[in-house]
Length: 197
Image 1 (cartoon, rainbow, N blue to C red):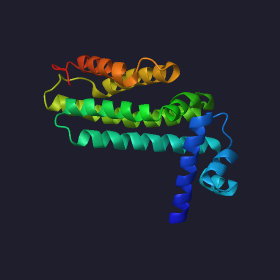
Image 2: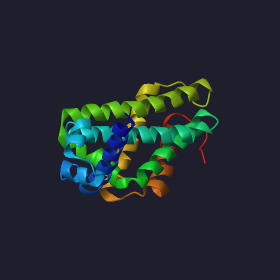
Image 3: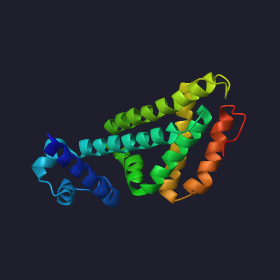
């Protein structure tokens, strides 16, 4: 069982590298096999199609991001500080993996409804994380009552739009310009009475 899991991880790591370099549509499963040093049979055993491999990679990236966010907020006190730490963790993680983020956030759109369903599933995980922090902020009295679910998706839309623009153009600088402006905008949108450092 361990060998199967190790092979699966090797394939996913290889797919991440090849997709990041060549893009989804230009990547061949044979190329992933060469990088992974895995047979075609092994690849198709774990991932019956390139689309399924791509979706597994999306899940892997989302899990890694969520894990980084959870670590970032673990040491924070107060819901607003946790919101700020979560935003910084996502921006930092994606800026380190720009090519992969570009593939996962932009190139999947040609995959149609299956990609949309996977994207919505992953976005829901992030929206849930945001919603919980917002609900904590309301409970602790840091912000006035609000519809945390709608607000979480609105925030996610703003974050996504800035990420997509940065991925396509390189502007505005994600950490130096977007993060401070986005943090300020999002905190004001929920009636936070203080700006976080």
